[in-house]
Length: 308
Ligand SMILES: NC(=O)c1ccc[n+]([C@@H]2O[C@H](COP(=O)([O-])OP(=O)(O)OC[C@H]3O[C@@H](n4cnc5c(N)ncnc54)[C@H](OP(=O)(O)O)[C@@H]3O)[C@@H](O)[C@H]2O)c1
Image (cartoon, rainbow, N blue to C red; front, side):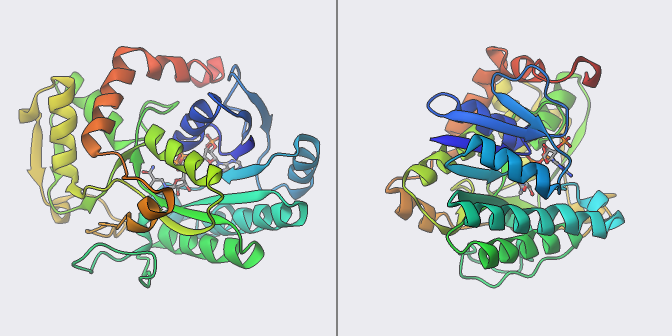
């Protein structure tokens, strides 16, 4: 398969590219951060349909996976028009361009489309109720994708892992601060289903191989609080658990409203793939193994030297 990945410099994009490269041809689209990545990269500030069309025509990928997004909640609240442009208009244009060319399209969405009020795990058929600009635009991006290209895959995700900036994921937050002996808060009342981003990437690749289409929850199969997550990371890395203070998110300084319970069912995904979703503990052990083997430095080395 040949994959075109937009948002190739992001946390998911770079790790998806690294996983996909093992067996497939990869072409990335970024905004100029990647310099010496081990795959071909085009720099485009999206939306730029003319350039994107010519990239699609010259590379003829089998799949386009859209990992580009404005994923910072505070930035989305401050600039709703930009959030709409990147999280709604871009996927709509990409979905349309793919439909016109017979290229299969995958759009990445978020677990945060739900308000967190449900007591049981959310299934794909549950009605979303996004709480802020980020999640509202992500939900609108899902709708725009399916309306332009009904055969698309839309994957609602939540992941942690190593990023180009070394500060994009919650896993990096705990490792970086605890390694420096700094105290951090761990929210006990925010529930999510984290998956190592490389596992997310492998699951996405399996979905492509199986030719799935439709809406899927591509998250971990275990729900936990952010505090529990931090404690697991600390234990695995041999860092001090005592530095993590259990705290309620209500006592935090976060201003943008966030859902407290993002427990999503992965039943549809495991049925579609015909196998269980890997456990959280295998992911966190791999996160540590990557650290020991210098994977974070390796991927950071792919960016422009003036970005360090
Ligand atoms: N991280 C999570 O746990 C999580 C949870 C739920 C959903 N998601 C979803 O997963 C997807 C990937 O998230 P991520 O964490 O990998 O995000 P990220 O690290 O912020 O990466 C976003 C990517 O989009 C690119 N981008 C932004 N604006 C662009 C533009 N105008 N033109 C071209 N590229 C642009 C960024 O380029 P630059 O590097 O140049 O900025 C970057 O490559 C997103 O759809 C996000 O909503 C993530």
